[in-house]
Image (cartoon, rainbow, N blue to C red; front, side, top):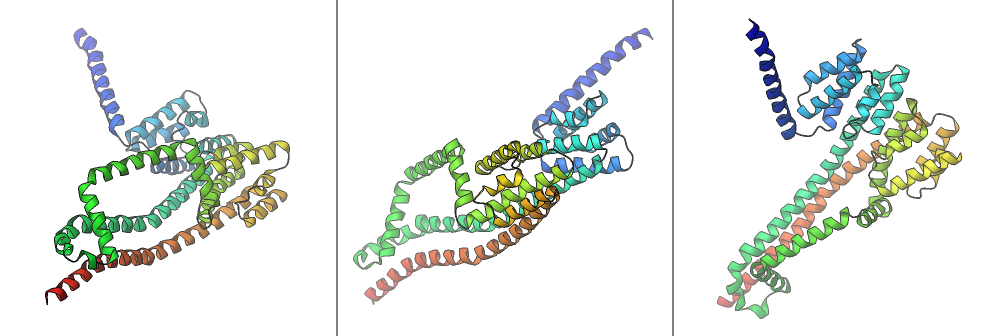
Length: 375
């Protein structure tokens, strides 16, 4: 009997070690948690808290229901920190790759005010809107990108495979060939003879371009163009304005300070020019001039947004007004992207038609001349 008592802990320890190794391997090869996992966490936690479940009990329940091993590990660690007496906001702040400062600040404010499940629903709604905007942008760009890639593939196929078959035939009437045919024949010969040089050039240009885009100067240049090039500016300004105002509105309405709310915008807005604007707004707030004074200095922002922010600050209802501005421009942005995606289809089809027409005419016209010469 004593032997059983002594060996039992050894067996349990070995089992625990094997389980730990298994969970480590699952975390190592599992997909990193993202917005969908955070949305599930927010929704389930809000529901459980609303039904009267304790915070620790809700966290342990969610950990059991979470399929992603990495996200499950995060929730388990948060639950452990809470059980040890740490605040919920502090426990979340330790996982800043999953929970932004906006999330942590709002949870901290709601934790003190006792309205956490309402804030969780607002955070869930914010994530949903962000995902909807991202999906709208992706869907608007997917079809034109597909048409561009397809067109390039057709052109390369015709130049590399089709044109060489007619090369010797066209040589006999080279002086009578159209300019487009001569040009395409030259391009075809170059691509077939120096394909390695062409691929090396494309790869080198891609590497140089990538390095420039990831550099500080390149990123700053692109950020500046996004907010100042006509037509393009309208889309990017609305994207960043919606993202920033959604964070500011949700934060201010739930009692987060203006400075913390502005600082949280940096987690959302990825444009350096817009971030500089946030810094100037913070300086205006610190000097006592107010939020509206900082927004008023941005020449790329719509006048309507500036006036509404000034009105909201004067009436003491800045958070709610910012929320309405964000909703308005989100609706306008969705309509604009939908219109652009619908216009892109006929434009791209027209371009493809022109390209295919040039290729076909460059082949057909010489063949007609050969047939007339033979007859």
